[in-house]
Image 1: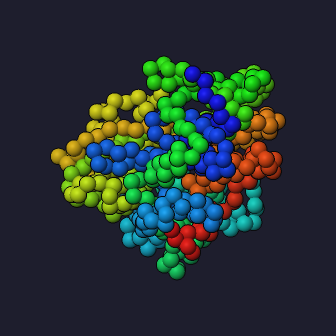
Image 2: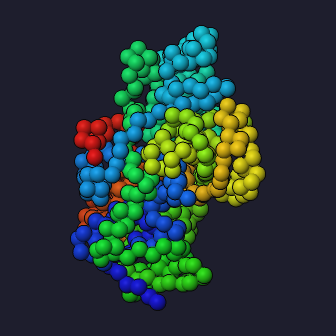
Image 3: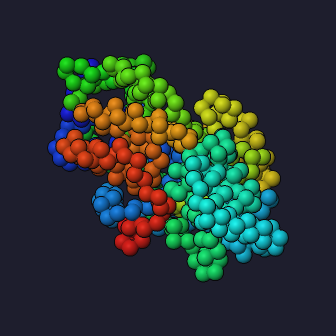
Length: 478
């Protein structure tokens, strides 16, 4: 059966959903195609026996009024709570506060380690201030701001564990967007003032029902209007024909589908879009798309009887000897994420699709993770009632040193396709937060009538400032 629509949106993550709702509100006929069995993309949640699990930790931190208002309308100003963020780093058999508090480091690591970190950090800042050399890699960026000792203890191992490659192979573009304490001098100011750095959000917004509740509410609003959403639809071909843009899909039980539209907004992984497009793009475009890489994530979710384990929202675990790089206790995100007298943990494991940790049976992974938790002093013997894995194949776009060189020919190709817009984290191969994903969707809805908006989406224009700075909701909470 063939379905017709004015707009066809590939992917029902936050960007695709926001775009769909904006178009529906303008009276357009819209169809969304989603490969998974639920909407939300990486910002979705699943419910298992009354326990809510997210696909990684996602906090809603709107930076402008428009996005705050868009989400606030979905909840009628009710349904989100403000959560105090508390994070720790587990390193060298000790729990340290995050952002790093020099007093805490001094107490747990001693004077000489602290002095070494401080001296090498100050030296690195002074040297960089004088020489102002290039910062091509993540390693350059980190060494210039924190010095060799802190890089050796924390930043280097954590980065290598997350990316599965050395920090010298990752672009410095990643760092300014994601590291909340951006230098040793900022850490010192934090030490003197006892306040959190201005770039670190010490609380955030989170809905009842998990972070995926935002996507579910957008989805409901779309379907109440002139929009349709088809789940479990894998994109097989995107064909330009005389009748328009035809998308062929496969569904449950090898069910095939055809969808015809005048315009397409794609939020699916950029390399998949290029490979499935017909007629085939130029060879240099296909070659560039094939060089784009993603870091995958596997989540081992534990349902646990008894009291909560920690009061942390996150625990960062940089050392390679532990399988997971981050731990979440969802009860600390919302009290309704777990039934009474129970708690849960999500252990985040960075891996490559098809690699050892991606393929490892749940039973073996569980045994290894339990051993790792016990080494950290988190003993769960007899408390785990159920465990299971969830997966995110396209967890992080890998910013290799030459990633922009790969994106340029692809962006140029898309720029010439007047009836196609790409947007979102996967669609643009660009790391963005939740509020930015929504903002991109709203911009994409207007991109066909405003070429400037399409051009804006295709520019490398991320702010050099950390993304948690200047948050709108701190002044006007939902």
